[in-house]
Amino acid sequence: MNFDSLWTPIKVGEMSLPHRLVMAPMTRNRANDDGTVDSHSALYYSQRASMGLLITEGTQPSLEGQGYLKSPGIYTPEHIEAWKQVTQAVHDKGGKIFIQLMHAGRMNHPDNTVDHHQGVAPSAIAPENGHMFTAKGMQPVPVPRELSSEDIQRTIQDFRHAAKSAIDAGADGVEIHGANGYLIHEFLGENSNHRHDEYGGSIENKVRFALEVTQAIVDEIGADKVGFRISPYAGFSTIDEGTDGANIYSFLTKKLNQFGLAYLHILHTGNEDILTSVRKNWDNKLIVNRMGRRLEQIDVDVKSGIADLASVATWALANPDFVERLQNGAPLNEPDHQSFFGGGDHGYIDYPIMENLK
Image (cartoon, rainbow, N blue to C red):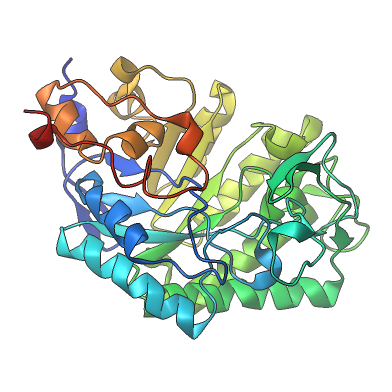
């Protein structure tokens, strides 16, 4: 297979990247109970440094933002010091790393957090038939607490502080997680946001929180160090943008475009009209993660010009040397799905690389 379109260098923000592949953010649930990462995480990410730009797993900007067991944080001095070993290890191997800032919102269970807090959301609405894994097994997602106006302003500042903390930890930038059914995405949903204030109702109001978070982070660390991720109509956590979905993402991406961010990252589930609209609205670099593509289709969006870069998830998880394997036409490791979330080194840092297969 010929993937020549992927091997052209590109500049994203202030970063010079060697090719058009990106490691997508993937939850691994292997942080310590206090949200600190460790040397195993440093090895995991540095093993994959040849991906060029690595976007980390979702990392909570505050304790309130945690929803899952053993997810990492980036808001305390201890978190900053712990992430330094990760960013340094990646840089030592020539890679770049953005820490994804993810507030879980209503996707929370009190059993998953040290203070057993209730999840928060734009409205006190639990995801329909929503369940999540806890130390006691799968449990229903409880009804979240509705954020007050004061809570929203505090949360925006939490994002701002987390972005600064990420830069202090040596990260090249941050990705704002506005996708996959988490807090920012919840403000966009017709069935998750029933507010009647300036953060609900109209399209302009629904996207306000996303834009205010972005503004705060840009003010703190600069637009060239910021990316934003969206997942239009992906259905995660039963978020439904409703009949306004296309207009919501058109309005949101036009507004985000005005910030001059390093990139926009879209999880593409098949709605070509929305993807075309996003590309039309977006002047800077666009990363596309196309769900369900086969390996031979990995370059389809870059080759067509709809995307500047293509992000890779499971293939990168199971193949630390994915770039080298793709360049050499080598076979890929099979992913071990049982070890994706939580556990020890198996399925995390022990996938073989080509030189160990000879």
